[in-house]
Amino acid sequence: MGLLRRKPDIKYNKENADFLSLQKIQLEILDSVCQSLRKGGIITYSTCTIFSQENSQVVSMFLENHPNFEQVILEHDRKDILKDGCILITPELYGSDGFFISQFRRIS
Image (cartoon, rainbow, N blue to C red):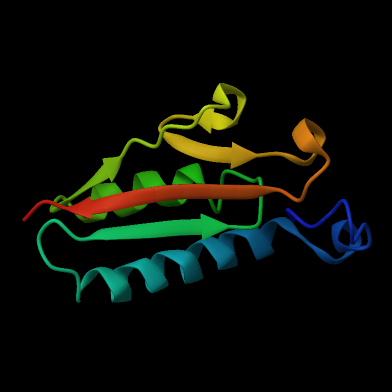
């Protein structure tokens, strides 16, 4: 959905169930990747969507299910793209596509 600016027809092809399905897939990917990470290692989680189902909700669910990880609080000079320790770029801010970036660090 972050590509909506360039591909407006996307909004006609998506349903609410799609977001939950994508959320499940994102969590499965993170579950798989985190198994091979050493203590102190960092996972960067990034999507090209602006919706919380695939972004902040995935971050919360991942951390809830993986107490051996913590969120890395991201910083940026442009404070308007920072949200809850993550980067969220929405199309109206800079005329770009929508993006979300978060990081997790393995603590044990």
